Image (cartoon, rainbow over the protein chains, first blue to last red):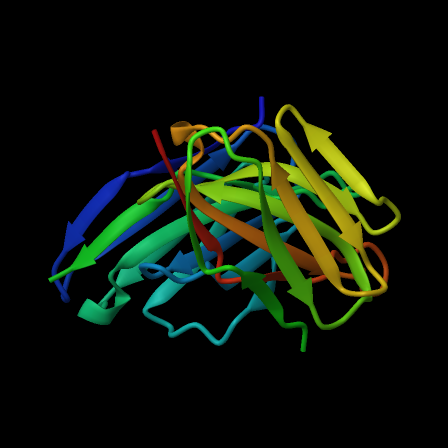
Length: 113
Length: 117
């Protein structure tokens, strides 16, 4: 099983709303990632969790708040977003320490009105 | 900083052609290189992973090669089909940091492939 599951697939929210994106993997991977992708651009790294601890924060605005409740779950809490935050948010995991292969979920398409 | 370039940016070919997608990177101190496929509005699907010590990997009609010293990788697609139409992304992972920390991943901008019947 090489699946990373993301919910919801689509999310529309207003600038004052609070919502969350969820990601789950059951491959025993110990590193999990959030990426943001705008149309026709490559994914941009936002956060990395390694062994459930935040190891990389790419200077992401505080309106994005990551959380890793356990080794299988990764959340991204959203609050007071801007229309320019509309994008595809991708979760990924890796854990084969000898290969470093990255597996992505299908993404959550976020629209901020 | 590692820079990854993919050429061409877009490619349109008739069905049945063999084709080559190119990826180049500026820093040869890499841990691995991964090729992905992305369909519009979807996530990335891992196609092939080449470790820094390897020269090539094959999966079905796909073959990826790596020349670390020259900073290049190619993805060869044999007998292309309309279902191969997608964006192909190359990503390079830096060598490990201290301990077991995996290095950062750097993406190219992708090659948008269209295979027409």
